[in-house]
Length: 312
Figure 1: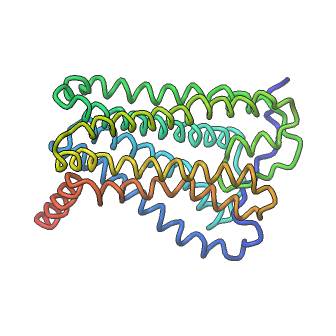
Figure 2: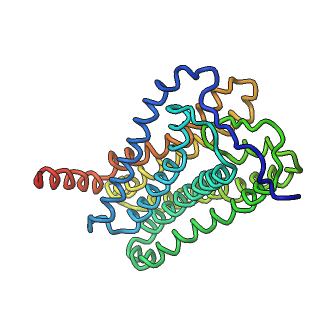
Figure 3: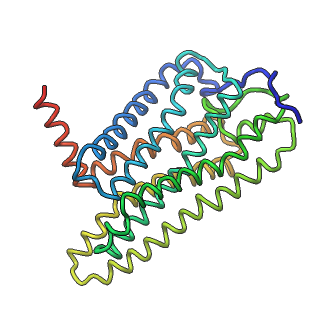
């Protein structure tokens, strides 16, 4: 099989049948994109500059915010390019790179949520040794491990995309490149590229979820052993934001999976809309959740705006 370098570019797709409304559809999407960027950049800036937030819990939150920024910045250019300028063409290399980052960052997000569950477990189960167990060096190692696991796990299927011939229609079904879309256009044996992602999902994303679920069973068991009702509530309250983020992420994953698996006869617009929900809803909601439910973040935001007004 020879490297395919002569094929025409892929064509991205906005909302089929709604091309005349693309400019209007782009307005709420642009608002969401800007909100995501502002919310997550603010979180990272706060955690970086506020010494009161220099704790493992907030370092992991900064990783989550950075991941959400990565997903947004990866998809935003092509989405807005299609909706605003009707710029549908995308070169193979750019398409494969975009698919790599989209899928890698999805697994990174799952891994960061797992790391955050580990952080909450240590904080509640062994509070006296919390800072000695989750040192800055260990937090960095966990972050590197999460990123490496995701990057290496996605690489095999993306590398193979470069070697497939594409002799069918070059029209993709979204305004960004996804592996499952691209392989449908390949004229080659794609058995490995069909099976391997299933293994990755089961071995990582689902395993992460079950470990998170088990960790919260242990957390609940530890909390129920606390004599003071007030202390129980305080301990559980530190987990509320993380639980909300877990629900937001995994509910959208399950929703997208069900649409692809059981909604084959649903209009393509439904599939496309659900993809946008999956990629935009968690990055949009995570900063909102932590801003509402975490007192230290609220204090940091108030301090930041007070400082800005003072300088003004």
